[in-house]
Each structure stands twice: as C-alpha cells, then as structure tokens.
Image (spheres, rainbow, N blue to C red):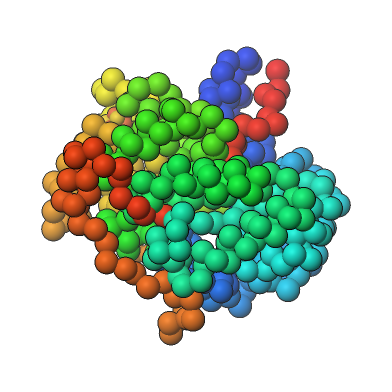
Length: 423
Ligand code: SF4
Ligand code: SF4
C-alpha cells in the first residue's frame, strides 16, 4: 500500500451521467462500511469477514471518535456499521450517539442479539439511525443452516421488538443462496409483517464465504428465478450493487450498476485498515491504514490503489460482449476470490462464461489465500450446523417440473440515495 503525495487528480466531467462521475471517484465515499469489531456471538458459515474473535488491536473509543470527527469534516453523511457483531462492543451505543451528534447518520447491521425491547425503544426515539437485521432463511431450518442454531429466533425477536417499539422501516437483509431463492415471497412477507424493507444481497465468495461458495451460491437456473422475481416484485426491494451482473437477462435492475470499489465504496476494518470494498478484505485491495497513513481522508484521496481503480478500466475478455455496457464484467471481489482473472467474466456470468472459465481451470484453479481469519479456534455455542444440502440434480428436477425452487439463505440500500452530483 502506498500513499501518493502529489497524485494528479483527474477532473470529473462537467455534467454527464452519475455513473460517469462515479467512475472518476468522489471526494468522499457515498457507501462507507465500517466494521467496528471482528468479535461475534455467531460464526456464520459464509461470513464475509471471517469474524468470530476480537482483534486485540481494535480501535479504541477515542480513536473511533476521531474517525467520526474526520467523517464529519469530509461530509460523509452516513456510515454502514457492521462487523462482526458491532453491538457486542461495550461502547457501541455511545459511538452511535457520538456519530449522530456529529452529523454522521448510522445504519448498523446486526444479528439482533442486543436488540431488547428497551434498546428498540431507544432506537425508535433516535433520529438518523437505521437498523438492518440479517436473516438468511425465511424458516429456522434454512436460516440456522448457515447462521447457527437459534439465530432465526433472535432475528425475528429483534424485528418484533423494533416494530412494537414504533421503529419505522428497519431493513431485513438477506444473502441470496441456493437454499433460499425459493423463499423470496416469504422473505417479503416477513418484512411486511414487521413494517420493514427487504434487502437482498449477493453471496460473495469472501471470507468464510469462499469456503462454502461452491455449495451455497445460486445455480444458473436460480439466477434467472431471482432476476424474474426482482423484475416482478422488486419495487421497493433494496439491492445496492448486488445484481448488475444479472442485467443481461433483460432490462437493468434498479441499484448501482457499476463496481464502485475504491470509487464510491470502501471499507474501514476494526484496526483502521482501509479496503476497496467490504467484500475485498485481502492485502491485494488494502489501500492504507488511517492510523499510520495520516487519516482516512488521505487514504481515500491519495492511495495508489484507489488511484488505479479510478482509472478507466478495460473490459478485458468481456469487452466484446454485447452485454458489457450493463454487466461490465460483474463483481471484482467475486472474480478474485473464485480464482478468476479480474478482467474476465464474473463467475456467475449469465451467459455461462464464468462457469466455463472455472471448469477450464480444473486442477489449476487457485483460490487466493486468506489474508486474515478471525474464526474462533474452538467451536462456539452458535456455530452453524451445516445440514445436508440438496443436490444440484434435485434442484434442477424441481425447477423443470414447474415446482418452486427449493427452500434455502455495504453497501447502502441505494448507494445513490441523497447524492447530488456537483455541477
Ligand atoms: S467488488 Fe463487487 S461487491 Fe465490491 S464494490 Fe465491486 S461489485 Fe460491489
Ligand atoms: S461475458 Fe462478461 S460482460 Fe458479458 S455477460 Fe458475461 S460477465 Fe457480463
């Protein structure tokens, strides 16, 4: 990681589309994720940050406050806080209050473990705070398969507590997997029941997700089911930048149709390392550290990595594809962590080129070694019990016989929300 002292700044185009402006990068990220801790009471099978144990170098309360002060100076209007399970930090609620008091709105992701009725009432009375509850199955069986025993009940209790306390418009956040694509209607019903908004996100092969991606990622036929469902029912469903690789199925879906890594998106991790994207926690995508490299603003605006990511990107093997304008080759993190080249097709390319590329690698396929792993060394109480997954042939048989797909499991809901390009 290198910080460039005199980085030549590429002037953003006057006018033009939002996407054109985003490709040049912004003075401050509009989708900033901050993982406050790697500690977690659960140990989800697909955790993107391999969380479980607290890192002893975690930023102190005072250091976190200094980060918030800097975000306020940079006019970062809100931050997505996650982890790990951020609410297990003893100073978590203080930091939420501190951020709001300093004009930095907070949306935090939680498995619900600390959302008691009392805390829900406090949240309902606090402005500029949004809550996102993670649930990866519309039934306990499907959810607990990846998130651990009891985690379904915990998440539902948190949703209920928020609803009964009068908290408006919590988010129900679902990672789409092979086991839950058949539950999209049920997820929507749960969200509606508790006055929440459904948010669907893509399973990326990051962190422990790399270990289970082959088993959990939706099959090609299910990608089509997902796309069709979003076209038919997706109004009001949040997706961020999760599904722009599905655009070649037809019309573009709402959301950010661009990989915003290092341009409008980034991640601060619990020790102050800054990565290009929450799904790219790897040394290859480490831009700098806000403690040792002179603060977050300096890393964001002057890191060599981010300067590279803001340069015009070639489409590589995808550039001749008729769908390149909408798909853009898909997700950088998904390619990297499945061992595919960054300038080739997404592993879930709807034309099947990603699958072909993976098959072509055969024994030569090399997954990048994880740069860090915070998984607990001994099994935790809530460690997920991986149930027997349905075999691919069973799923395909169900789909071709017209049955519903089998049951199965940031950035901001809209990274563009509230953003007005400067003239
Ligand atoms: S690497 Fe993937 S997840 Fe990260 S910003 Fe790009 S498209 Fe989104
Ligand atoms: S070939 Fe590349 S651009 Fe075309 S659909 Fe596949 S991933 Fe997208």
